[in-house]
Length: 199
Image (cartoon, rainbow, N blue to C red; front, top):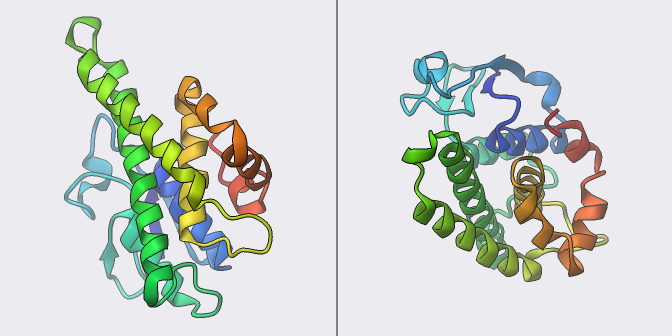
């Protein structure tokens, strides 16, 4: 398999953590594609011009991270990261959606800050900041400690917190307190999470 990736993309990081947790990381060749500002490096396989994009061994092309993660999870049926049915499945997928929303808002802020001073939208950045803060508060009941499975929901939380720490440390501070902070303090050293930390 080939994974088009950017080393600092949180969406790619989620896919890489899933691959490590499923024991199939060695089956994936990483192809660097930096879609910003030029999406041409990945547009041939993903018309959206975004990473991650996965080319499976049979030539099937998949994008983006939720679809790729589910595909990788099915390659090794044991210990699924996404429950196959029932309310547990929807809870994991809901948690992933919330965390992907945090990432979307955070990436929006990062890109907005790269614009020239006169072209930035303070309103857009404030909306995204407010969404991140509300979402971090909503994550508290989603975390699970101890022997609970490290499923795709938990992976998504780790990726969201890691990206905030990496790109928006002023917003990551809200995640350092309480149960969420204690959980993150332990999970950040999990081998799959530590191995994919951006430089």
